[in-house]
Image (cartoon, rainbow, N blue to C red; front, side):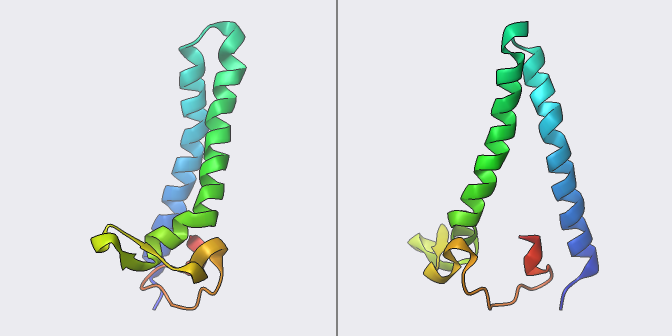
Length: 97
């Protein structure tokens, strides 16, 4: 059964992280010379895009796949690129991930 409170918290925490990225970019931009501000800010935005793509490609499978390596991480080829997601999660909608 999906818990509405857990889903709301996931949405809130995701929004806070996405709001944090421009703030972090401006903080890093203030630490460099004027001519390097744009490049430094773009590094923060590109990093969040790369991390998002890596999550879709293999992060979900490592986090939610069957346990391997003594329980350190998991892997399931069916989860690679979000394929065959049939096992329900406990409290949060699968769309949140």
